[in-house]
Length: 134
Picture 1 (cartoon, helix red, strand yellow):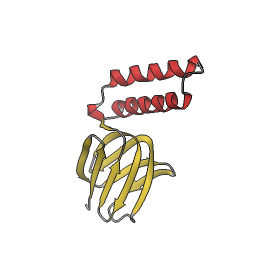
Picture 2: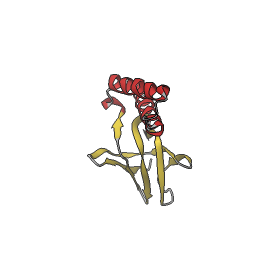
Picture 3: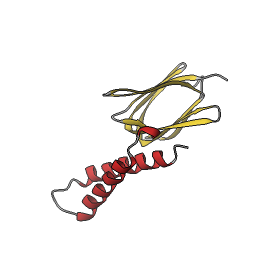
Picture 4: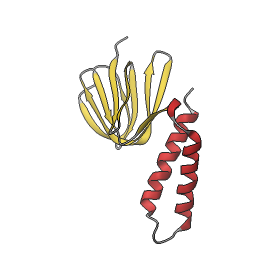
């Protein structure tokens, strides 16, 4: 079966590089499924899981936004942060979720609600990716 080279990169360096049969990601415009031969494109990504399918194996990577670029037989994802499912510290993610929920519920004027909601979405995404890694 034909494959794509997938590269997931953050400001801290590469997170993932491999050949896969299919890439699924959550773009601002909706869910994208990319197979070999896909038309070239660039799309902004939402906080979500990138699914990388190769045969019967599916790997998950939690990304917190960024951009996806498709070129001939290569997909590059540039993300602010990205973690493979097996690298996620789930206890730290649960603590981050609890802190964000407390900030949102406090309704204090000095709390930036939008920032707290983004922190909550990132934490929930990391927990979901970790729990669905198998």
